[in-house]
Length: 255
Image (cartoon, rainbow, N blue to C red; front, side, top):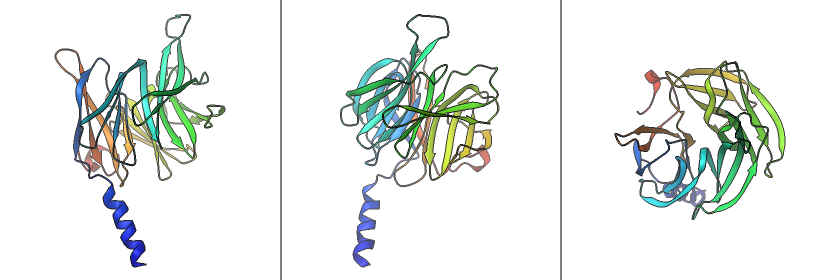
């Protein structure tokens, strides 16, 4: 028992202690679209046209240019997966194609990319659960009074479209995370909104809180939530805050 407790303590101490705010270095042409944190405490940032890796203090480790529009992302093992939507090849106004890109965590080199045409009209949020990909449209129009979550297996074979009875959210869902039996979805709006759903994607609540630029679980518990702004030169910066749990303003742990 003593040996087991010692090993558990060593594992816990190996995780980084995250600051209340961590800033991504540099400025980018696109705004922050999502964040992810791996088991070693490295942070991955998606800036629409750039993918960035930092350590847990925000020191730059890797940075690559990516095709627009890269959106939300999720890290699993030695891979970072990013939801992307691109203008359709026929260039019809408003038409987009949806993709999942896979990158190596060590150097952000591309492993593969696969089209997921069922995600209409353009992939926004992405998360994983039990080896399956879950994506949501980040470009839904005003005539939708619910959101849709598309499930794929590890080979990106389509399985099912889930209906999330959330009511209308501006442009659909931008970011998402699955943590301990609960789904969290970040949405644009004035003010931005967060959706919470059960493991089976049964809608539970929607409240005013901003997870629209990123939401991800931390290795030792809690969440990080993305923040960003555009400077006077029209370049974008990004940072994250750590919270115990996404919640309306009066219940937030840190901001």
